[in-house]
Image (cartoon, rainbow, N blue to C red):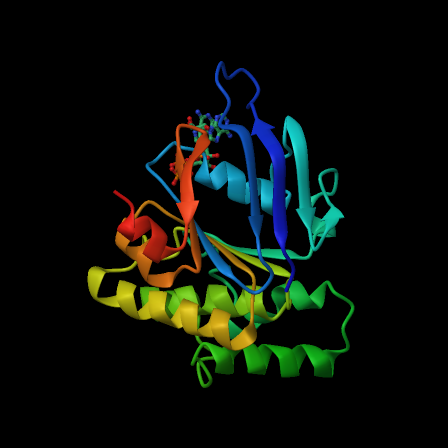
Length: 227
Ligand code: ADP
Ligand code: ADP
């Protein structure tokens, strides 16, 4: 697991008149789960995508594990992202989906099989290898997406609104599963949500964003106690 640092990062999309992210600085400790919380349009996803290397800052620096990765594309960062819509390949089985990223990594076949089996065991989906995504519930699809990201053993794992496609009943369970897995494996997780209750429940620290800047940050306790 690695730390993530933003040093005065701004992002202005081409043609935009105002920045999506405006001079934002923060430090996320290695092995912690930090939530980016705020209303739609405040810059959470843009921040997450700049950690992943899917968007480049207009100015400022991004450091992962103490190294300046600002100019590096996503493929050269040790970061995995779980998307809101899971983005599973519908024509591939669960096992093929989970193995997909590993197949390009040059690992021997046996290592890929072991890692994929371990990843599915971690999310409780042993026995589902031959199913297709359409044969799974929303919660199970989400777990496949988490397993697919985990098997790459990234330094940083990113979640973009991971519960938004789940029904209310499943949300709490998947939320708690993500937190348990993060603590068990000592992962650095950056977690985007607009739901305050969700943020308070899973986070070591919360970074509250509002209109492209950080409005406040602290532990759930500190923010909950704040006037
Ligand atoms: P979110 O769930 O983060 O609020 P949105 O629904 O706002 O996401 O955006 C969905 C997609 O559209 C994202 O890939 C985002 O980058 C893109 N997008 C959002 N706003 C704009 C915009 N003004 N111009 C172009 N693309 C946009
Ligand atoms: P959030 O994730 O908090 O909903 P975003 O980071 O998606 O916020 O968006 C922040 C701002 O940047 C919004 O005004 C949005 O419309 C704009 N935006 C997001 N993606 C794009 C894009 N690809 N092109 C242009 N504007 C975008």
